[in-house]
Image (cartoon, rainbow, N blue to C red; front, side, top):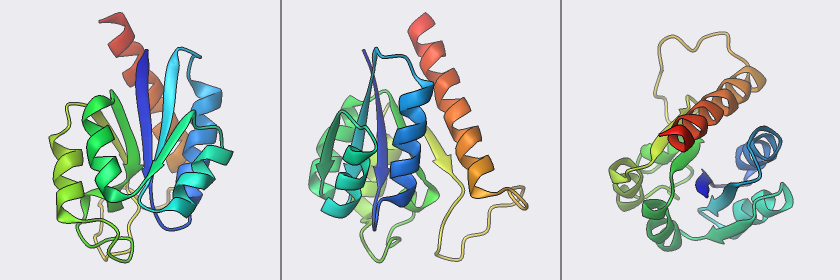
Length: 142
């Protein structure tokens, strides 16, 4: 069983949309996990259909090394992002994980990603879901 985790913070709005989209996109043999930096984000992902959810940075640091695909915004690898919810240790845990990382180029810490201009949130989410589907299919066929 493939383990796909969505990591989000703050209100969990992006995580909620990603979990919901993954639920429609991936086969039933994929486990979708919601990892929230806080309880509100985790609960939003539970309501969107994540099979299991956890909250808190320390818990995320324990779960991330066990998953196959990580889906999150760029914020999750920018220390201090999300009003400080993203710690340097969390960033290191995500980047060092063996999992494929699919990151949406969204951030509020004045980091500019060239080449993403003119792409709406809906377009970015659709592209993200497509890339996760390809990553899951490639892993299942390997």
